Image (cartoon, rainbow, N blue to C red; front, side, top):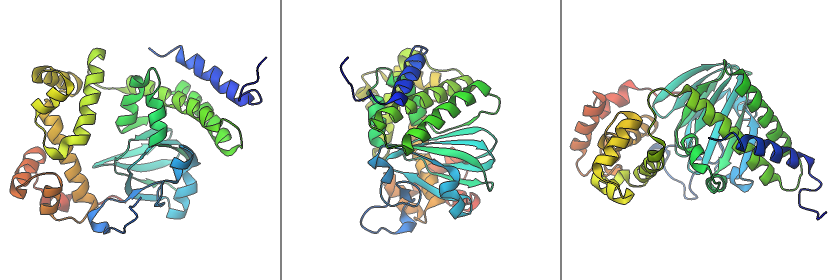
Length: 330
């Protein structure tokens, strides 16, 4: 029999078997020093200026490895090229995702897409792991035949209570234990093994997201178009594209785009576009010391007064009032 790169890797065969079984069930700072009061800290791994996780593509560590030395507090920051999953097995934490705050207790999952501002305050001696995926690893995942199935997990922050999900917890613990074993071992084909396990991890999370989802989901035929709309917003929201511009880029009518948005989130396309602008404004009001005029210009508004009116219409607070009333979370 012809020898393969995996011939002496029994763990890899084990991973492939797991993957095939699950597949059957699928239905830093820049180099130039910048002023911190104008920017939200943008790290590789927390506290590291360079993208150390990108060297291997997949990184896994215990929560305490990075938190204990920080008095169990990870200050708000974001990653420009890293996606993370936080798995808490035992303990409590306050989780900050953009302007939203969550209290978690016991077995929980937190997904953190690229660019989302996040911070944590853990109860001392909390147990769990953090899985970090580089942008290149996400690219590998997106090459899979059924990559669209996982896209909502990769692009949307979520906090999942797993305390009542015994079967899913057992699966996740199995995958995470194998990931830890493979990550620390000097094996050939390490990235392939880890990538298989990452996909199993993400599939399990996606199923739990679906189980806990509230509201009516969009028809499957529209999901691909809607996800493309979300990606276009991320690329062009500061250019103030109109709904018609997005519809043209997506090759759909404005009425079709609005219908998809209502089915998915109960909001118009315009409301979703403006909400992205307001979300970025909130990040900068809370996490930076930029002036209101600077934030307005950064977001593409030529008239800061108009920006203030839009913000107040959406939030019932002026930008200045929001900044004073919403404290920076630890």
